[in-house]
Amino acid sequence: MTRAIALVDCNNFYVSCERLFQPALEGRPVVVLSNNDGCVVSRSAEVKALGVPMAVPWFQLRDLAKRHDITAFSSNYALYADLSERVMRLLARLAPHQEVYSIDECFLEMTGMADPGAHARQIRQAVRRDLGIPVCVGIATSKTLAKLANHVAKKHPELEGVCDFNALDSVTLDALLAGIAVGEVWGVGRKSQLRLQEMGIADVLALKRAPAKRIRAEFGVVMERTHTELNGIACLEMGDPAAPRQQIICSRSFGAPITALADLEQAVIAYTSRAAEKLRRQHSLAASLQVYIRTNPHQQNAPLYQPLLNVPLGEPTADTRLLCRAALYGLRRIYRPGMAYQKAGVALCDILPGDARPRSLFDDEAAERRSAALMETLDAINRRMGSGTVRLLGEGVHKGWAMKRGHMSQRFTTEWDELAVART
DNA sequence: TCTGGGGTCCTAGGACCC
DNA sequence: TCTGGGGTCCTAGGACCC
Image (cartoon, rainbow, N blue to C red):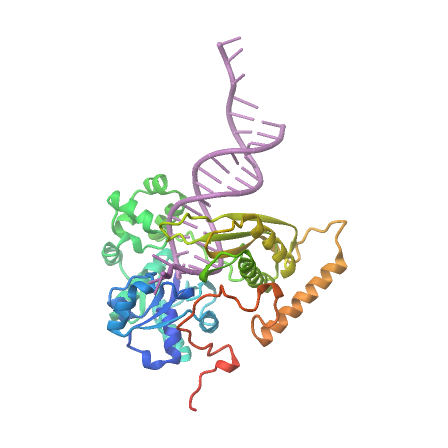
């Protein structure tokens, strides 16, 4: 039986989410910016047509934006995450197996279906009709090819958002692949693309036909797998949808550079608290954490200082207070006065399941129960009353370091105060 | 005069993804 | 003036052990 893996990908997802609540922006140039209003992370088709590349700093676009009346939004992750969940829940019902790959795309198993292309068209209509989000679907025998099929579906409007490689004969497929730059392949980044081009491999067909041994020798096992997948043999299997994260990171750039240790401490406590919430949500414990701070790497005339310290926790824990204590200890070790810091971050590492804690003779079980109960209460209040309602005092109240968000839309779907208003 | 080799574990850093 | 954040996987090299 022919393997059929589908990749469903939302079209410029963040922009589509914003347009959902401001339909007047349909057909108009729109971008969504990264945290701190730093760079462009989602572009509408109209903005792509203006030649604006991904990840370009927003301040470099000021003139162009004015000339073409581009509407910009700050990132509204509460909104995007909620809409993503709705899309994924709907898609999960339309296939026997789903792997959510990122906030805006997932793989669906379609092997054995009578007509995967027709099913894909129904999926597309259902998401559009029920949730208002446009998606494209690519189908092929491997994940890597399905990604390419999705790319083709997006580039060729006449396909109406669906491209099934399995429905093409090999001559047609190869001709198609010959017209796609090798850098479009999933797993081929900027560096590899340059090296491949130097080897005379510029398009996808050339990579597909290159000898496996040569690819392996020059690029290693990862690229070898990509090569195998391009030849139609699946070696990246559908992942476990419920697999817990092996690492949980929370990091942010500051709205303005900060120098004082006290401000860094507030930020680190805030980030550690967010990471700890995520850790408890997946019912895990962390056995170590990393804390890091960084000066501005784009500043030419100031020295770059970006220390990172690993702090073992002794006992694995999910208690915000213990994690914060460790993070502060690490921060004070790496902090150097007199430098202008631009960013700080905390990563929880060595993550294990909550029930897998090794027991020892000296466990204080009563203390552990108190800790778990306190954290549960904290999370319950914050879930119900809004994130950050109850937090450690050390996070501070003024937050001079908080990020810039000058173009924020409302949290239309997750906050009672910010619901969309039909009429006033 | 001559000074092993192989396995494992850990860490840092790179490349890539969205 | 203003340049994101959160992940995964792999590799190289050092420490350590027998």
